[in-house]
Image 1: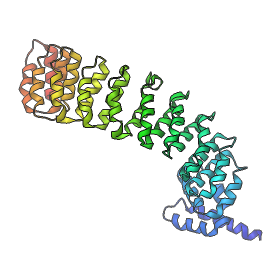
Image 2 (image 1 turned 135 degrees about the vertical axis):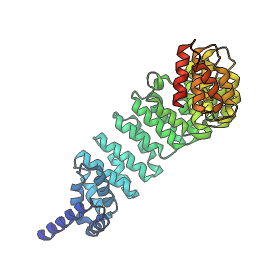
Image 3 (image 1 turned 180 degrees about the vertical axis):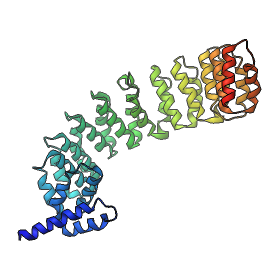
Image 4 (image 1 turned 45 degrees about the vertical axis):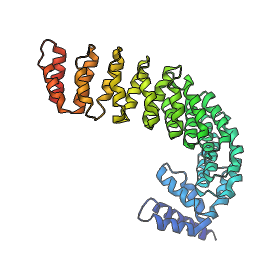
Length: 378
């Protein structure tokens, strides 16, 4: 019967090659599934491909073939670690709970890639009874496994696991792993995760000289939605200026009306970046923030007036242009310049005479040249 087996292998390989053609793909997949277990060796060989788009197609075909499971399971004991990982991904795609024991065993593999893939496959299957088996992997020696463990456990949205994910969030030595923990908690959108995320925001490991890394944490907090507004408002009074700045930035994204008054107070923060972030956040509220920003224009600190002038230039409201025209006479030159930029941004015709007057004043060449440039570009 070897000749018959050989012909089946040839037919399998021919059908596999047709999977690359979108016009033949469905028919080829049906043909492979009809061949069943006889097509599995060729499909397993195809899993070695370097083309990841084709790999996913092969995996989906195998996932739809129950007859493939015995051969795939057997291969987990001897195949190359990369192929083992790809087989485990097939199990995750199939979401067959009968494969849970196989995947739990894979969590003990000597290969970290296999352990990480098994974590994600178990999360895809989604049986809550497996969670206790996933938790120890949060302490795995390999970064990639700890990252996968955070993602996998987070998908269950189980508040009883948040403490252990938070141990990673606050204590892991690698920022990439901490980021995975933050992302996992944020994606749960569960209010019980908020205190843990806010605790991380107050941890300088997250943001000291890590302006790029902290964005993952800020997004995670933002994902909490309206439930995190009050904790963020409280954070506007934090003793650490960086925390206050980030709180204002997130509140800007959320745009919740409850934050307006407190952001108005944050305008007067002596930390330059906090005041700037608060002013920017207020622009998101449009006309509702105009009176608050106008009031701050009388503050003796030039930086505060400057922040307000910049913010007002981003709000289309009839009250703004006359106020900015007045600020062209501010004693601080940076405030004057930003008032000019803001007036141009508004494209309000009432600003044109004031800008022309400055342009024609040769006594101040710098401001005259700036006004001319702005008028010519508007």
